Length: 114
Image (cartoon, rainbow, N blue to C red; front, side, top):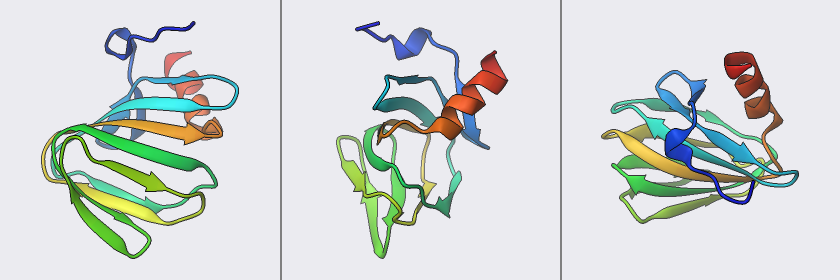
């Protein structure tokens, strides 16, 4: 499986207003996530290191005590166990990368897609 076409894959619902296909290996995970406009990403944290690259749309993203109005082409780095949250200003598309993989997302995929 060296090539992935996210646009041909079914979406996994992560939270209300946030969904998209995910792909993963033994050590890394990618999510091609769509976020509805005016969606609140509740504050949360996890042990996974995360990189979030904004492909389209605008979002206010908070990592720890820092907040940024992100626009396409910007990337956020979230160290493990650091609280983060956000609010989409428009419809948003993110490419999220996690290390290690999010087992909770793998479980969501199994429950939703079989």
